[in-house]
Amino acid sequence: GVPARGPGEGRRSDGAGGIGELRAQATAQTPGLRLVVVADLAKERAETVAGRYGAEAAPEAVAAATRSDVDVVIVSTPPNIHTAIALAAINAGKHVLVEKPLAHTLADAEQICAAAEAHGVFLKTGFNHRYFPSMAFARRLIDAGKIGEVISVQAYAGHPGGKEFGHDWVHDGAVTGGGSLVDNGIHILDLTRFFFGEVETGKGYVANLVWPFTNAEDNGYALFRSKEGKVAQVHASWTQWRGYQFWVESFGTRGYVRASY
Image (cartoon, rainbow, N blue to C red; front, side):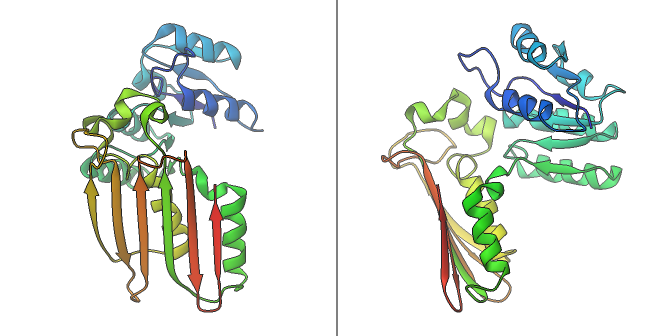
């Protein structure tokens, strides 16, 4: 596989997109992978990252993602740009890893998934929290039957906003598709599915209790129910004054396990 990166994930002061830089570093450390091209609208940023890992720099992501010498594309842009790059790569037969959220609208996300299925390529979202040691350990305990059958999950993720936003577009609903629930909350939504299984119905509330952003809630609360009647609770917050943290509690018929960060 040969990853390419899309335009820099943000406008960080370090001169390189933060997540894209990490993906480039991980690619360079992974046997069997070679970083071929780094694309970014900011020429200097692309050249800086590419130069560190022996890759080419490019100003335009779609052209880079559809090159014949690229097999895998990593899309590390703001969410509203994901669709154009991902679809171009998929339609060119490339495997794609897209940072979370997959897209900024449900329609775009469904379009990306349909294209990947039609072309028979791998499509993954950057849900790295499943691989945190605490989460992996909790999953192993559940698989070993230590807490019996999982009957309920409670999950929380929060940070205080402010400097934790990193980029202005993080709290721009037109770019991301929402607020806390698609920012830090999307990881615990994934972890809920990881421990709880698939859900059948969901209900919830969003609120702006402190931060007055348009179309970007600072708190999201959700209840999910499985086909068997099991219930999961999820709360994502931008008003966690103690700093960034998250936890997931899985309750079983014989015990429970709590994994946290």
